[in-house]
Image (cartoon, rainbow, N blue to C red; front, side, top):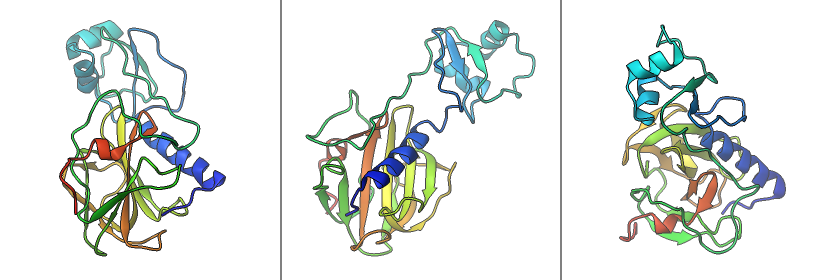
Length: 226
């Protein structure tokens, strides 16, 4: 199990927050009611659908002529409410299990014996012990926000954004089979199980809502992965 020192906790926090805000632009200034800030990868069609209006009405409202030339950080007027803002804790969650205000449909990301984290800093996470090289699957569809090994103690790690609120973390992998920015489907093999950054072969799986770690076992199917 990874041991979180203060410096490691800060680095994990930074990576997770960057992942949660991957779709956001560099500025943190909030938009007003009836406005939306263009994020990386946004299209006018997506923005219109998100706010319950047509592309043509969005073009008229913002005097847009070239719909293919949106700028990251550009603020548009919209008829619907702005996208929900994300919030985050100052350090990994500790204490008793907590739940997000809504649910998400997950599958078990790996097959093996599962156990909850035992230290205060990982008590919301799940460890799944299995055979080296066995498949690690995306617990839900989403976009790969991080793929790398820049965090000591977590080895080869993936972070997948599932929507504006939920993201999942997969650590200690042997091989990473997807790259940052890739769209993945639920059940798709995204890595292989290993022991990078760990003394045992296992998957470290964590679920976060608005940047805060939530009890992953509450959202995984009741049928055990064993």
